[in-house]
Structures are given as structure tokens and as C-alpha cells.
Image (cartoon, rainbow, N blue to C red; front, side):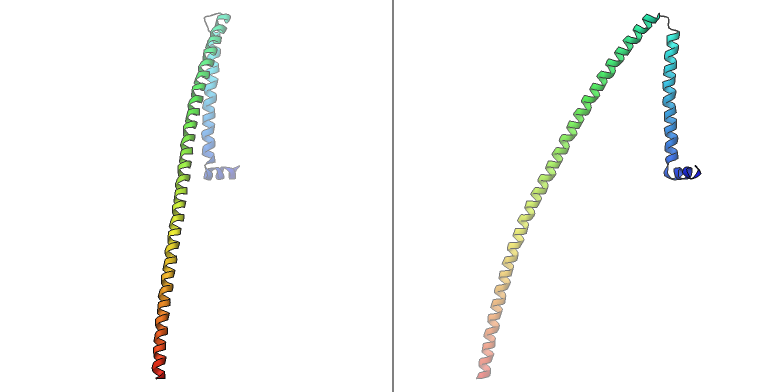
Length: 149
């Protein structure tokens, strides 16, 4: 028990339990007061039992219809909001996918462009090396001719 209290103090569980206990007590107090008030109202009602039951039935019926109408309104609002949010999510996902696809295609185009530039640069380097090799070859031939002469 003592260890549980210490752990509860560190984790905040004691505080949550206390708040839950207070809330439960308040709810039970409210419900108990409402029931007691209803019973006292029936005991001291100036009307006969049949009349009182009729009034209670009318109030219950009106309350039922009011709650039903409000629940329907809330359901409609929630449904509308879910549809709206779903549409926004669908649009955002679609936009993100299209942007990704566009960026991917652009990346492919850029990669092809860089590859073409690299091929051209490789050809240019090959031409430079070939020209240099030819020049060196000619110079070697000139030196060999000079040595032979």
C-alpha cells in the first residue's frame, strides 16, 4: 500500500484518482438530489396521482422528442463535419501525391540532362586526350628523327 502511494505520487496517479473521486461524488450527489427532489415533488404535489402521472408522461414525451431532435441535429452536424474533413484530407493527399509525382518527373528530367552533359564532357575529354596523344606522338617522332640524324 505504501509503495503504491509513492509510485502514485511520482506518476500523478494519486491526483487523477482524487479528481475522479471528486467528479464521481459530484455526479452521484446531483443524481441523488434530483431523485430526492422528484420524490418530494410527487409526495407534495397538489394534483391527484392520475393527473401527476399524465403530467409526468407529457414531460417525459416532450423530453424524449427534444433529446431525439437534438441528437439528430448533433448527428447531422458530426456527419457534415466528417464529410468536410474527409474531403479536405482527400484533397490534401491528392495534392501531395501530384506534387511528389511532378517533383519525381522533374528529377528524372534533371538526371537525364546531367547524364547528357556528362556524356558530352566525357567525349570532350576523350577528344582532348586523343589530340594530346597525337601531339605527343608527333613530338616523339620529331625527337626520334633528330636523334637519328
